[in-house]
Each structure stands twice: as structure tokens, then as C-alpha cells.
Amino acid sequence: MAATATERKLLIGGEWVETGEWLEVRSPYSGEVVGRVAKAGADEAKAAIDAAEKAMAEPLPAHKRAEILVKVVAGIARRHDEIARQISAEAGKPLKAAKVETSRAMSTYTFSAVEARKLAGEVVPMDAAQAGEGKLAFTLRAPIGVVGAISPFNFPLNLVAHKIAASLAAGCAVVLKPASQTPLSALTLAELEHEAGLPPGWLNVVCGPASEIGDVLVVDERVRAITFTGSADVGWGLRERAAKKKVLLELGNATPVVVHEDADLDEAATKLAANSFSFAGQSCISVQRIYVQQQVYDEFVSRFVPGVEGLVVGDPADEDTDVGPVIDDDARKRILSWIEEARAGGAEVLTGGSLEGDLIQPTVIANAAADLKVCREEVFGPVVVVNSYESLDEAIELANGTRYGLQAGIFTADIRAALHAAQNLEFGGVTVNEAPTFRADQMPYGGVKDSGNTREGPAYAVRELTEERVVVIDL
Ligand code: NAP
Image 1 (tube, rainbow, N blue to C red):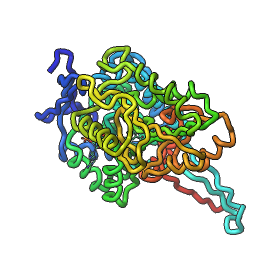
Image 2 (cartoon, rainbow, N blue to C red):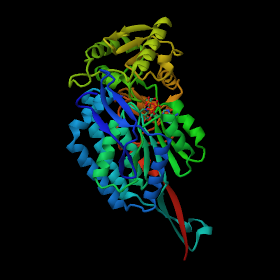
Image 3 (cartoon, helix red, strand yellow):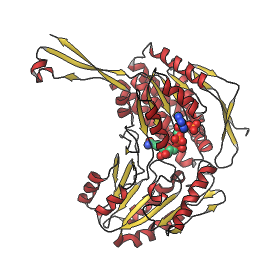
Image 4 (tube, rainbow, N blue to C red):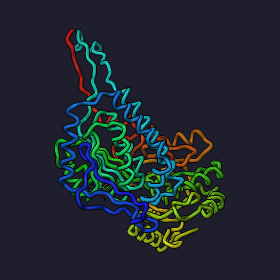
């Protein structure tokens, strides 16, 4: 273990717990051990649910929840640089992207605090129907109950924040299982919530084997909601097994963007070069498929490819790096094999396509057939396809042609084309003259089709994590 490596225990019922077994956390760039965390199993997961249930027996008033959330914002601000470096070390995320993620987590906590203070029901207009005459009715918003939260490796701080800050805002205690590759940032947030005065049991963090801990969360009836961010197959599998729970899914995408004939090509090329490759394409909304109107195709490519070639590939800890490693060797092999499949299928690699040291070069593929994996599935790596189209409707059909539907985008100067695309792209979000990788944390964010069934962003997550109870009074 490196001299600077971090060691962290689990948080269960307000206590920092050791189990005698440890999970090593390795840098995806150097392979060096950057930390270790106590390893939980089914027993710790059950103890965490016990603690969460006990905590919820004494509800925390909204003002206290909001005060804790605000204190965490200050805590993140105080340790901003250290936290960004930790994200970079455990996830291999370029430091400049890790800094943005750290600031975004502050935003997520801030908006969650606002939601905690705003949480309220509404008055029902009872005399609008004859049956309601002489009655007064209003709704209360009750916390749904204990929340099981499962998070992915690629935003190890801010996606954890979206789950645990929104749960606290809603008045729910949480059992969190962070990704095994990146548990350190989650435990830092737990430390900050603990220091901010969160009473025991409201947040419990268990790191360990996914299926063992996942099974406990699925089977235990006291866990009333599971909020999951990760890959589609795991997510939909959980939902199938947890029929009686609310299972909120934030899943993958094969993000498309349309560059129409009247687009500002310089703007499109610059934004798309950066957003196809930040964090080596390992964002659920990293641009993967670019459809360019054929009259401007060559012109776009002549601007886009040099932009991609100008990206700095290297050590994620270096402030100048744009593109670092992918998460592990399995991911690297899979991505390279998909590039090979595209080559063998007649597509042309315009730049990249192989390794630079251990890192996959930012790769641009042209004329890829729609049935290739790089067009159909989520690459989750530094690979983008640039294909041409004739009509806008054809581009929309191509964009819609995968099982995913998280975010899509269009670059155009024509408001009618933009609105036509917004109405016909089957996605949870559509960006206009912005890369579809854009997300602000207060937005409703989530997908349709295989990409999920919910919206995150504190206001929307709190709605999902509370239940309406109607109170009817006879006057
Ligand atoms: P993943 O392999 O599905 O893992 C996500 C989480 O699920 C991890 O904590 C993992 O634990 C856990 N897990 C795996 N198998 C499980 C099981 N059988 N039962 C319960 N939990 C289980 O995804 P990933 O590779 O970390 O993340 C990449 C994926 O997340 C991509 O598809 C990406 O698009 C998606 N994503 C979506 C969004 C969004 O907001 N829509 C945001 C970010 C990422 P272990 O780490 O211990 O295996």
C-alpha cells in the first residue's frame, strides 16, 4: 500500500466498524493500492438495515436534516482538493474532471437541503366533485422507509450524493453499497455527514460483494426502496427480483447527437470532442454516436478529428490530462475488441484505435454499420462513431435505434428542427446546441426504455422517495 493510502471502516449505526477483512482499492492508472476499506458481507448488511430501521423510529425534523446537508456542503468545500484527488486516485478520473465532480456534489447537497425545507403536501379541491362537498382534504408526504442505495464507479462522489443527500432530504435512512472499485469517496461523504451531526443509523455504508449485499437489500422487507445507478442488466435484474419494492433505476446509454446542416460546426466540433472523451468516455451520457448531415459531414470531420487529436492522454493526477485510463483490464480488452469488430465490419478508424502505453487512444470511427456493437451498445470507453445522414427524420430514427434512452442532442440553428428533434427523440433529455453530456444537478435526470425508470435531481428524487398520504376531514 502506498504511504499516502487511505484506510476506512464501514459506518453502521453511527459506529465505524472493522470486520477483519479488507477490500483493496487500486489506481486504474498505476495499479498501486491507494486505499483499503473494511469488507462487509450479509451480516453487516443486515445490521445496517437494523440500524436504519431504528433510526427512522425517531424522525428527524426537516430543519435538522437541512442543517446537516448544509454543513456537508461546507465540509466538501473545506476538503475540496483532497476529495478531488481521492476521486482521481480511485477512479482514474482526470483531476480537472474530479474537481468538477467535487463542486457538483456541493450543488447536489445544496439543492437537497432546499428540498428538505420545502417538502410539503397539497390541498385537494374537494368540492370540485359532488362527492367531496363538505369535506377538506390535503396530502402529507411521508418518507417511503429505509432506502437501499447502490452506486457505480464512474461518479463515486456525486452519484452517491444524489442518493444519500436526497434520501436524507426525504426523511429516509439509507444503507449504501458503493462500487467496490471506488468506495473511498462514498466513505468520505459518510464521514462528513457523521461530523455534521447526523444521528446514528441514518446513513450506513457497507462495502463488499455486490450479489451478497444486493441480495440482503432485495430480500429484506424493511427496505422499501432501492435506488440503483449502474448497468442496465444488473439494474433490471434487481427490479425483477424486488417486485414489492420501489426500484429506481438510473442506467446506461449509447448517447447520440445530431449535427444538422445549419449547425455552427466549430461549436459542435469543439464541444463534442471534449464530451466524447472526458473521463475516457466513462460517463453514462458520454457522446458515442454523432450523426452529421451529409452536406457538412467532411467539413465537420475536418474540424472534429484535430480536436480529438489535441486531447492530452496520460496520468489522471496531472492537471493537464483530458483522457486517462478506463477502469480495469476487462474494460480495456472489451473496448479494444469492439473497435476490432468495427474494423472487421468495414468501418474506418479515423484516429486512435489502439493503445498508447496502457491507455486506449481517443478513437473516432467513421461509416460504422448500425448493427455493430459501437453503434448499438454502450461502449463506456473513449470511442465515438461519426456517421452521415440525409434527412433529419433519418437522423432521429438512427438516434432512436438502440435499446437506450437517457440523453440525446442536436446542433442546429433552426428552431423548428430543434423542436422537432426534441419531440421525436425517445430520450429522458434532449440538449440543443450543447453536448448531451451536459447535466446540472438540479435537472430532472433519467432515462426511458432500457436506460431507467426514474428521475434524479434532488427535487425529483425526493418525490420518488416519499409517499403521499391523503387526509380527509368531514366538516
Ligand atoms: P455495474 O457493474 O452495474 O455496478 C453498479 C453497482 O451495482 C456497483 O455498486 C456494483 O457493485 C453493484 N452490483 C453489481 N452487481 C450487482 C448485483 N447482482 N446486485 C446488486 N448490486 C450489484 O455498473 P458500473 O460498471 O459500476 O457503472 C457503469 C454503468 O453505470 C454504465 O452502464 C453507466 O451508463 C451506468 N451509469 C448510469 C448513470 C445514470 O445516472 N443513468 C450514471 C452513471 C453510470 P460492485 O462494484 O461491487 O460490483
